[in-house]
Image (cartoon, rainbow, N blue to C red; front, side):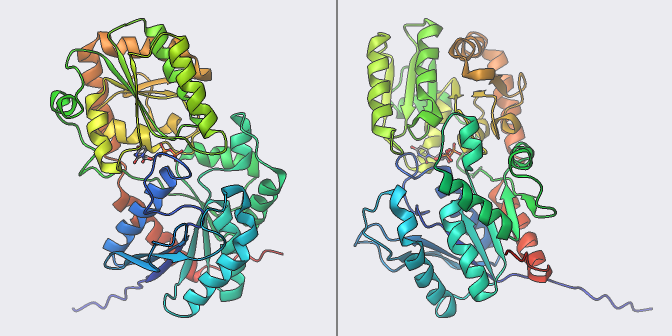
Length: 415
Ligand code: UDP
């Protein structure tokens, strides 16, 4: 007997991604450009491959930027003029209305959307307004939160805290990247019932995969037989590159090298670079530390493959893409035991977690890895297998379900 099956398909066709303060097209690794840029670009790409049309709105920061960059079919970046090109990040609150007006006009005109997805609290404030004006569901990914930063010793102004509370009260869904970030969120911000969603970021395995260490070292003109430690990230106090330098000193291996890949970031970035260079000189490590300017994202795989160990000593980390990329390349990670790094690094299995960012412990675990190559290979191999859990395709699939669900859920009514 023939059966009739009714299939309900809830599909969101078009997403407006808000990334006001930094463009997904910017080079990550310095200034305001880091994991969030990679996240926005890779997720939009994966969503568009799955048939979701993605338009990312970002603030124009130079006259050369075209109005629209068509990244690939169904994925474009729109540069929105709002305020002077060189407006410092701290002054961006003054242009939120102008930016919001322009995005609203695009959404009513050439780039309509079914859902708003805001990245970082500045975009969240704009989305909060547009949700009500355009009657659209609103998803927020904070990437960093003031109270989380404060716990790591980096304080943010009170108005940012209030802004984040407003967004939390209005967002129809709040994306966090892992269970650790979720429990941190609930501990610090309470329990917005049914609205916190775990969307784990991914890694592009086509690029970040285990490879030939000798080949990578040849490409980077590094010696074959010296231990190589690697730090990758924006240079600012939050990332604690000084701990990596101190760990190198405590390793007491004059043949070891530390590569520091990245550039100054944030208001204290330049000061941190100067401080780091002074520390290197003071500890007599000038010949052992190489500063490398920010590298195109996919090129970084060569740096990971060249390394014996990747150090991630951050004060706080909502996820920690660098740790994931290193693992995907089969390299053991020694990381601070904070935030998403607690989820990404399996202590003793794929690398090591260090409490209190103790440089002596970073050095101890780095030595453990350098002195025991077969143990290091086992850590790296398990890390690479573990990293296969994370892909941008999985992340996009999770978001597609969330967007579709929001289309039929009752919206959060905020004040
Ligand atoms: N990155 C890069 N080139 C660089 C330095 C960093 O592409 O020279 C990328 C890196 O691959 C990672 C991101 O910047 O994807 C940093 O993300 P993470 O989550 O580690 O730190 P965040 O910047 O979000 O604090």
